[in-house]
Amino acid sequence: MFLDSFSGLFSNDIAIDLGTANTLVYRKGIGIVIDEPSVVAISRDNKKIIAIGNDAKEMLGKNPEEVNIIKPLKDGVIADFQVTELMLRNLILRAQKKRLLIKPRVLVCVPSGITEVEKRAVRDSALHAGAREVHLISEPVAAAIGADLPIQKPQGNLVMDIGGGTTEIAIISLSHIVVHTSIRVGGDKMDEAIVNYLRKRNNILVGIQTAEKIKIEIGSAYPLENELRKEVRGRDIITGYPITVEVSSEEIREALSETVTSMIDAVKRLFEKTAPELAADIAERGVILTGGGAQLKGIDKKIQEIVDLPVHVMPDPLYCVLKGSGHVLDNMDDFKEVLIKKIED
Image 1 (cartoon, rainbow, N blue to C red):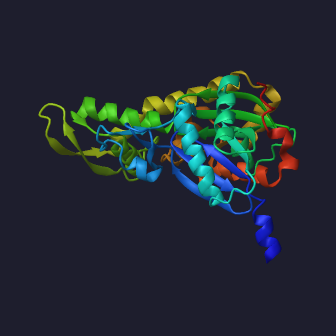
Image 2 (image 1 turned 120 degrees about the horizontal axis):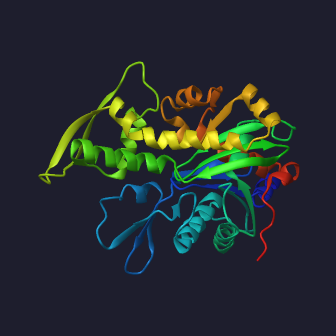
Image 3 (image 1 turned 45 degrees about the horizontal axis):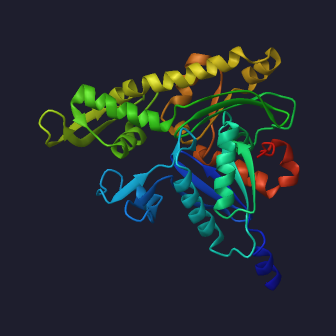
């Protein structure tokens, strides 16, 4: 028992899916230990953290002037270096349960289209937050590993990871990304589309959190067998008073159509750059959907209808990237090839 607890002090490595909408943390040998929104509440006066994650997200749109609500990641990359560092430090401490006898080795998931400057920003943030060593892995590769795809074999595997800030589409073979595209369109753009649609069509102003609830409850990309309706509360643009309107899943589908179409267009563009042999593999195996956006009702059917390929939504798609990262962390020697090469200063 003593040996177990002693080794527990050393097996403190963690994997972080640093997402625009949510940040997930996996601790080696334990599993997912943190799943919270990437939101931080900071005091304007002394710049101290008031809340992080769920508590901070609940303050969105309800905060006084003295409290600043910040989403430190935008389009999948760091937009606010200082706040990201504070958030990471908090997450690392919580994941370790504050037992920092040895600083942890940290594996961070990043978009496939990330620049060298952005890689360095992620690495430096994690190092300053308390990591002893930082490794990076591309989100589509981590998602493919989480989906149990045979990425180490000479065959094409197409992964479409729909996150909050970006949609990553990649064809992976022999442990590497062969061809990829990354568009800065994801769940956040869907929420904005719903806000804009309701403002124009229904003269009602709703917040992003309300739009997100509408998307989750009645949003769809493809006609539903039984269309849904939902009462929405917001502010009347004309009178300024609070009002309630009823919206249908057909209306929300129309609101989301442009965003969904841009994602499917990105898949088409990817195929234009794909070798015939890889295209043949994908025609047989289809498209693997991961990420929170894969939970949108009927998105698999919509993609399948347009690109005429089988489309499979993975179980628990939101956790696919972190599941794959955790598997890499647990078997680092076997997955050295999938890591992004060391960043030079």
